[in-house]
Amino acid sequence: MITPEEFKSAFRLHPAGVALITADPGGSPVALTASSVSAVSADPPLAMFSVSALSSSARNLRKADSVVIHLLSADNLDLALLGAASGVDRFADESRWQRLPTGEPVFEEVKTWMRADILHRVDAGGSNVFVVTIVESSVAPDAAMCEGLVYRNRTWHRIDDSTVASMPELIGASAG
Amino acid sequence: MITPEEFKSAFRLHPAGVALITADPGGSPVALTASSVSAVSADPPLAMFSVSALSSSARNLRKADSVVIHLLSADNLDLALLGAASGVDRFADESRWQRLPTGEPVFEEVKTWMRADILHRVDAGGSNVFVVTIVESSVAPDAAMCEGLVYRNRTWHRIDDSTVASMPELIGASAG
Image (cartoon, rainbow over all chains, first blue to last red; front, side):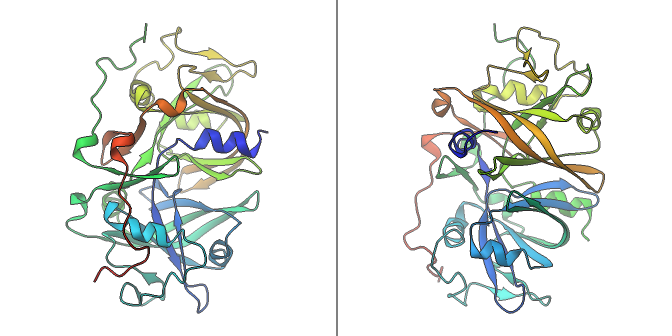
């Protein structure tokens, strides 16, 4: 096993997409920012994410049967900050969100969001890994026009056409 | 449940960091590129990733007890392509990799890699979600000098100081 400092040093530079996850596990909505959302399988439609044991939002999320996963673009950076801020009522601005017929809060300004049922909840060192089934999705027609939002080394980045990498000349070629 | 096409449409624009995962489940090394690696917990040091059921590398990876997770930077784009290519011997260039004392293949040109033991292997719609314990890490002193590598919308991106997003004026402020 490595130390927490070694662990953080290793993962700090690994880029991640950013999501806002919301739920309503019994009357009190929760929202939190997660950089761990990824697709698992398209058929059946499964995704996963993890939440730390350290926040009260995360503890409440464990009680939920369903969530809304908002995949954030660079335009949504303020929502990413909101879902990561301490001591803030993340639902204070009632003009920004509403409830789905099934009860989960949704911030409809986000171009891509999905409603999901919890399929597996794996305890992992006090944190939780969730595997979810996507039951509903909403993708705005202009979603692809937005810049991507990436978190890396405690910093937020925008990606767009100008950040596309040039391809190496030979796949699998020796560096020597 | 949504269709596979709806699922892909929703996740296509979600950015992801890129990793090369290697293992040797009994004499025949495997390597595959994964965009699903994320940290779960620093203490204990846990991470997760998923692999599709569709590739032979993924099927072999299910037999492994341990893996090496290489977190790729933009300089490693050719390794990302190598681990995603079909019908290629990913270990053909023997000058690029060696075995750890514990047997797993490692591409030491990658600035950050970690050896990990499989803690949980969750079956999820034919795919597998792995939760792993990091037992060893290697971070090169100049790792932070490298550009980040991001996959989004079937395209590879580089991120660096020039892609840092400017911060919104008010956290949680209304858009209206």
